[in-house]
Amino acid sequence: MSPKKSKKSTDTVTITDNSTGKSIELPIRRGTEGPSVFDIGKLAQTLGLYTFDPGFRSTASCSSAITLIDGEGGRLTYRGYSIEELAENSTYLEVCYLLWYGDLPTKQQLQEFTRTITYHTMVHEGLRDFYKGFRRDAHPMAIMVGVVGALSAFYHDDIDFSEQHSRNIAAHRLISKMPTIAAWAYRYSQGEPFPYPRNDLTYAENFLHLMFSYPTEPYQVNPVAAKAMDLLFLLHADHGQNASASTIRLAGSSQANPFACVSASVGTLWGPAHGGANEAVISMLEAIGSVDRIDMFLERAKDKSDPFRLMGFGHRVYKAYDPRATLIRKVCNDVLRELEVDDPLFDIAQELEERALNDDYFKSRNLFPNVDFYSGIILRAIGIPTNMFTVIFTIGRTIGWISQWNEMMQDQGMRIGRPRQLYVGRQHCTYQPIDKRSNEETQSK
Ligand code: SDX
Image 1 (cartoon, rainbow, N blue to C red):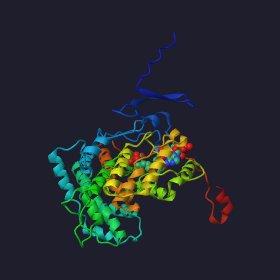
Image 2: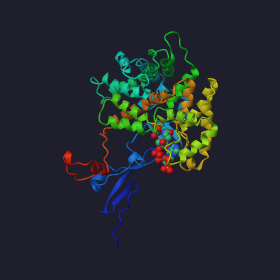
Image 3: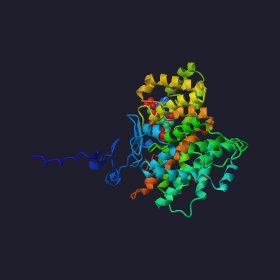
Image 4: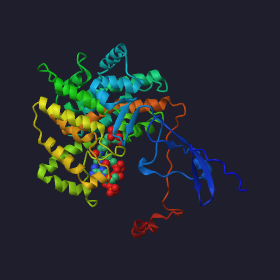
């Protein structure tokens, strides 16, 4: 009788290296929702093999309780609360509390948190001087990378970030100071004075004051603009293990100063494949220029030999409509109507969406509008210049980055992130004296 095959647990995956016949059973770990994972921690030491997954298409880098993205269903939750309910009922600062502390605050907790953030909005006077080193035409994201990183020069030696209390203070400082730093990047580019924050304004109102007020006259915040601004910050607050969140997890795993780590995430977000897409969408819509030119650009987006991509479309995780885009598109209508702005780019964007969603190329690849497709329309209506769009994304996403960092720092099993590689380079090269080297030989290698 054949030996009774050990019943394979249903909670494991067996990997067999057919070149050696060696196998390993790897445990499957199931979360509260979303895709399960199998833990490959013992793979290398058992089979001597490493996984290979550039771009992390099939790889989970961590476990997290912060944000869930249901890519198939087009759902997004922050700490279990749906983005639709939060957009309808909450505010950006309440969502900051939710993401950082793990649940919605009581009235008193929110009042205390709001007061803390309000009273940290000023920055060290020395930080003002950092702007003077930039050219007036520097991209505001370049200024953000530099000035946010510079915060690490003001907050480091007397703080132990392994302590939760110190991490809370760092979070409060980053949430409160980002609008000030961001608005000053814009004011610097305009050669205008840097306003001081006002404690009598809400978070979004204060940002608009910092962006558009003048010392020569009282500034009246437009409530429609402030409400839209607050919602955009809220909708951009976090999004799981996106590229810039993965950046802060990797940077923070070396125990680096969190302000320096946030600066690294700012740099990652800037790319047009990531947060820089909101600025690129407007450039694309302006290049299209009119509805009758849409088909030409759709053809270019489908042409593999053409580097042009439909900016604001597609997503690594969403294979359905990005729920944030649904909410932002609705706000577009409201804001344009209430501010009495008629933006032809909005008409082009809606027609472009309609045609793309009915085109087999986009349908077959589950390409839908993402968070960046309509956000720029709102920002234009409010008067935010295009090169500040990713800076707005930065302000909103700061809480997401530091919440991901905090979750990692709280993990007792956390260790420095250090991926391996598949080496495909040369071997056994012998050093040649420089007079023995020939250009052809070198270039042929
Ligand atoms: C954000 O990760 C996050 O959560 C990010 C974010 C967040 O909140 O943090 O949601 C914010 O970054 C949103 C994405 C913003 N970027 C853009 O809008 C730029 C345009 N989009 C693409 O570059 C692309 O869709 C990505 C980068 C968003 C996703 O790229 P993937 O997952 O690597 O997908 P892919 O390039 O492998 O595309 C799969 C197919 C390819 O065609 P085939 O090889 O199958 O023939 O779809 C095509 C791609 O060529 N494709 C597009 C396209 N996006 C994908 N074709 C035309 N236009 C596009 N926009």
